[in-house]
Length: 220
Image 1: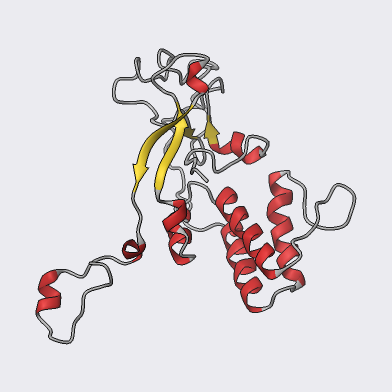
Image 2: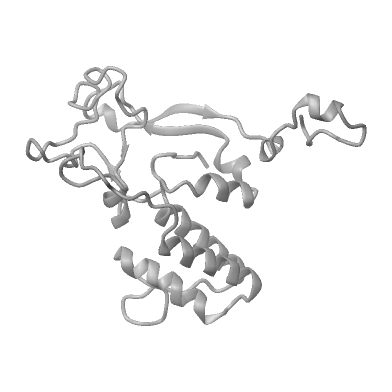
């Protein structure tokens, strides 16, 4: 399945609109009023008009940006928040004690805060993942969406050993060289290479050569 780097968040997902500035959305800096962002080639944020300052995917990260005046100072830097804590906890719990009630309890707190249906058998809920494997996939998906642009996905794909699929091959965005409607054509903007050896960095040759018992990491 082709990877769509910029669309980790489905368009029906409220976090998409909170986390991403997309074509025809209102720009966050309201100092000069409400400016509609135009990502197509000749748009106000397009490749032809932005010089080197344009998005290669047709989307811009919105998450954690300041509201109103973008020159606002003294903003805190978020290193680790409670949503990350909950997701770390339920992932570990699903591996150690599948079926523990805390898994759904804390996973549903994440989903409820996001404004999407929670897991369960009640009105408006969606069926809970029925197995450990299904729950693992649900938790991984929730991490991908909830923690998007928070410097966790890079490490998640590597510790889960799925980066050979998720971080390898063509990456898709919108057709930024075009105007409407061709702009909305899904287009490859980058081809990435990730093989098994990339899970580990190579050990510098001088260190390997300095000790007869030292061996290089696999693949290097």
